[in-house]
Image (cartoon, rainbow, N blue to C red; front, side, top):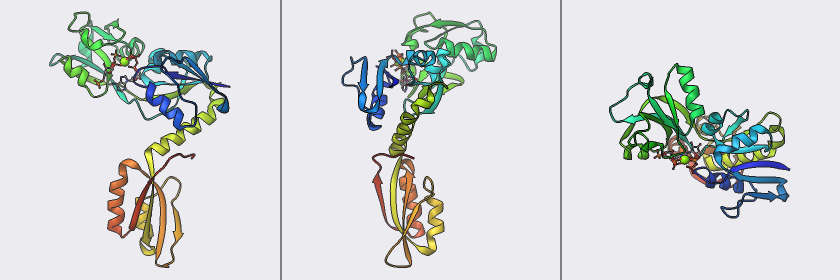
Amino acid sequence: MLRIAVPNKGMLAATANDMLVEAGYRGRRDDRELTAVDPANEVEFFYIRPRDIATYVGEGVLDAGITGRDMLLDSDSPAQEIRSLDFGGSTFRFAGPVGEYTDVSQLNGKRVATSYTGLLGHFFEDHGIDAELVKLDGAVESSIQLGVADAIADVVSTGNTLRRAGLEIFGPVILDSTAILISTPEKVGGAEKLIKRLEGVLVARQYSIMDYDIPASKLDAAMAVTPGFQSPTVSALHDPEWLAVRALVPQRDLNAVMDKLSAIGAKAILVTALQAARM
Ligand SMILES: Nc1ncnc2c1ncn2[C@@H]1O[C@H](COP(=O)(O)OP(=O)(O)OP(=O)(O)O)[C@@H](O)[C@H]1O
Ligand SMILES: O=P(O)(O)OC[C@H]1O[C@H](OP(=O)(O)OP(=O)(O)O)[C@H](O)[C@@H]1O
Ligand SMILES: [Mg+2]
């Protein structure tokens, strides 16, 4: 039975569970559930803190898990990123009082608060910066005002939390993070079905099916606009001068693609949602 670690709370928990349900697995029944067996899929889920997931997977006691890239790298666990799951996107950035810092070299000799001391320690080592790490559990943005740090390094998504604390970003992007599937070289083979199913969910979330009719003489121009995933399906219509095309199109491009096809001469352009996919 495959043993999978899933975030029990926090920013990733709900979407991770939703993805697993879309992938045909048993979802978490309530937010106090610690483990759940899904006998039909021969899988057991362990709902644990996202920060601890890389530790369990790296130790080999759990076979795969969903966590943040920032948390994996912070943990120094030997677990490896298998693939991005395209949610829980954030950046890991330095911030300080508005107008105070322009460059990370100014952090030499300063106190920098973070919940990610592993990640930040590596960055300081790599960049030859001698700063003091102040480890906090969360709400790191308050640490400067409260006098325990001179700058912070934290997860930034919209930037609202920073602004409300009177802070601004400076310096380079320390890390672009996203939710990821992790495993180890020893265990990843056993997780192949899970990986395929999650990839199918990602395709179904990101693509739609587009059908349209196109004059045969315009097919090449239309193919350039809708190259599809592998290759679009082209079928005959009763009128020999026209063809019907079906292709997968990224949802974010749908309207731009319809504009282009329409300008080329396509008619009856129809878009249908994808419910599931296996590539
Ligand atoms: N505001 C956010 N927007 C997007 N992703 C975020 C945000 N905050 C955190 N994350 C991401 O979610 C993952 C888990 O962070 P989360 O905040 O849920 O854990 P935590 O800080 O340990 O828990 P908690 O905040 O419940 O104490 C991390 O990979 C992080 O990058
Ligand atoms: O840029 P924003 O959209 O404002 O999001 C960033 C905030 O979200 C996270 O906080 P969380 O709610 O996880 O609390 P925590 O600090 O206790 O982890 C993160 O630590 C930032 O504080
Ligand atoms: Mg948090």
